[in-house]
Image (cartoon, rainbow, N blue to C red; front, side, top):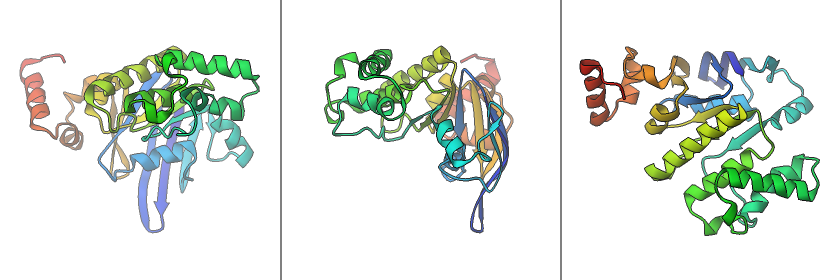
Length: 257
């Protein structure tokens, strides 16, 4: 479990995060949502150590990441997996070599063991047949699945995903959502997803944190969204006319989606 306590981040005279306190739960898909510029990306960067908080705490199972030494943070990061918005694969490496990369860098396994682990991860995302292909030879959705396989290669306790569905069609996005959700449950990881995708919010949002102008405005599960009375949340979620009509139908008729 990750606990955030009174987290603040300031850039010169601009306060981007203002006293955020929240919890990201084990074995669940935790989603961070909010408008562009709300601070959700800055929050995630503070969680993984790409930015240093101005004040506050980030506790990994009770361990204060902010107060750790440089060496302690290096070891802590080995417990983290990261999926970037662009997949960030190495074009000159095969799919198998991309997944093996963190194993080559950080594990004590021999070559055979590293290959077996990488193949297991590729099998988990249904990409065994693509092991010898290069990133440029596979689709965007397949690249995201390779990125997931690479992110779980070291069996992380914490998985961070920055807009994993960016640039994907709706059908492929659902495949990625289902994959992230099932992997989270299977490995009992603390998964945190930064997203704009409302399908993800409603489909796999087991713990949702809504950030508004640098503050935690709302927290709950997807089932609570339809009946929420938080105006800022509803304005954000139900921006389209179709979603507004769906919400009105739910409130009027008690429909369960």
